[in-house]
Image 1 (cartoon, each protein chain N blue to C red):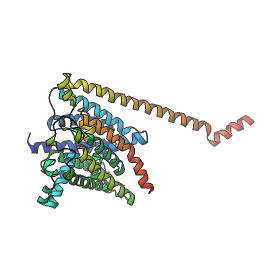
Image 2 (image 1 turned 135 degrees about the vertical axis):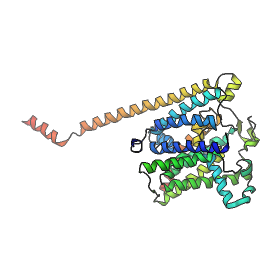
Image 3 (image 1 turned 180 degrees about the vertical axis):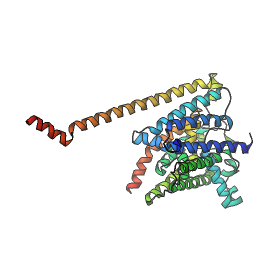
Image 4 (image 1 turned 45 degrees about the horizontal axis):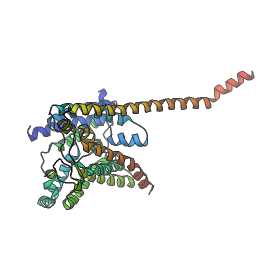
Length: 163
Length: 222
């Protein structure tokens, strides 16, 4: 099938996603990823800590943990859709970072993303595909922040790589 | 709609998004990083087109009172949080979408980025449980709360309610701005293309192939 042989134009792909996102907005809410990831974090933490997790007020006041939170399933769906696409286009194979510096950068980057999402209440997806199209003031603050971060990030990246 | 139906709809939406992002190689990190660093706009253009469609769709339905807009107070934490996120996505080489999509393609680095994101969120939950900032959604009022660095809540619908102008009117202004940026990018790409062609033509003139030059000289010298 041609769809799995050629790379799709991202303008076409993102236009289709935007139309679907408008429908999602009407049914449950705009596309977001950070909220689902936070709930997964809570569920994983609950598995390990049990009732001790309640000692952290965050998990009762901000994110009460429950498994039927729709945002979780967007992320699981993306994982499934990407896996199916990679398999059908024969692009699935294990890629493992080889250098220690790559692991260090990914670790710092991942931690910063996690802290940043929770601090802001939004992730990059909510910023560009939710808040800003709703013309929410937070969208403009978040876009300013992410652009500043994307400008500073390469400088830090270079410094870490150069030791 | 029941919680299970919401989860099913979300999973179907996510599956289609995952497939389309995987097949198009779209990356939000690249949309910002490549535009700033390399003046390359493949992903930026796609992001802008999506934002234009979404702005019309969201503000159009908000005019009619439909849809489920995000509703929470905003403030300095949005700027600081996304600033940290922006640095993090460049270092990790992936954002929230591409960590899931690349993990689905078998990328172990992306899976590790995802695990670290979860750890970062858990560490933040410990910090929040100590300082309670930014304010929890339950304590939000929609009004400015300057001691907590919160500006309150405002979107196209609140503008419509306060000013009596339909939300779509504000949406169209935003679309015009986004389209202006999109056109500026197209012009920049066109200028880049022309420069590349001129440079290629100049190179061809400066270093013509060896054999024809010999032939030209031979013809001149008889």
